[in-house]
Length: 276
View (cartoon, rainbow, N blue to C red):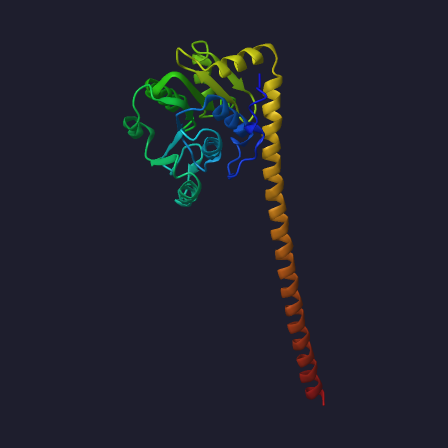
């Protein structure tokens, strides 16, 4: 159940960017931080930061002891494609301005970051890197020893069945081993308790969802509201740009029309002088 004391999941995220796949899960990210009060959050695959900055925002307000780490090369992969350094520079600027006291960016491959963290130290691990079966199974196995007895793992894109995506296959293989719940919207998000002392809040959530999926619907509605608001704002920005462009084009047309009229007048004068 959602405790009456947990209210931060109703807040609005402060930092959103493309792509939008993770946006519907932001209310649940807020909820997780509020109920878990994790000491250590690690994200594998941050890209533009929609998920990561949701964790940081909630931690900043709710759990000052929490420390967050984002691990990414910020170069892209086979699914998102390659991109320039401007993505990392934006993430870095937000991090330095708003979360420097609680957050660290590790610009490196996932395996290179393993030595940064002690075994059984991570409370919440978000795996959202390369989505092939081989990559996600490797990431899960490599980082599993880093999770403590209350550790929770998030796997994104569990409902994506496009060519080259293997998260669904991997989750189907392991979900009988661990207590888990899956959010079927927003391309799918699996919440997996990997330790022998799973958080009571997550166990209760799993139990409630097993009886009735209304809690999933609540998070879906809240998340889709954020997504639709974001898309509305982007549409309004595009409309304003188009209006500005239309005004500029109309001014150019008027200027050109004035120039054409002047040329026509001169042409008439030339023709008149020749006929005279």
